[in-house]
Length: 193
Image 1 (cartoon, rainbow, N blue to C red):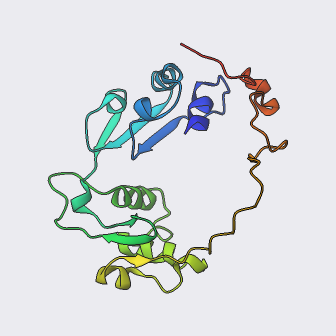
Image 2: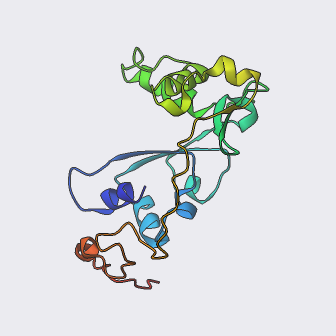
């Protein structure tokens, strides 16, 4: 995230020194690419990139761990709305590739936290679905294996008779000046090269 990038480029002696990047090419996905590249170029940060491709982010990594394709692990898919679906593993991971869950579970074991991170992908999905949230009540991996499950959504609220548009800002109007961004010198929209 942008917060991690800002933390890494800071000259604070207590800043992040190990960066394990999973599920994304941060150089391509995060805002302000020059700052992201500056974070990648920090000599005193050990970078691990877990990726399917040898893209721009992987080129800066100290270690690249190959992850498997979506056909080689189980996951929960949100959509098309309002449905949840189970993406079921079709084949075992090929060559030396592993799922993100497998990589993080093994890392947790090696760090002495294996007793806290010892579930399969499907067990983690059940854990998420067992959150107690009313929208996923009664949904579990066993039900998802039978097919998509519709999540419970709140009934739509009737529209107000007013034609006035209200924004989620303190003034309820669109705001071009944002006081809380002043410390970053970005209280007004600016173009940066």
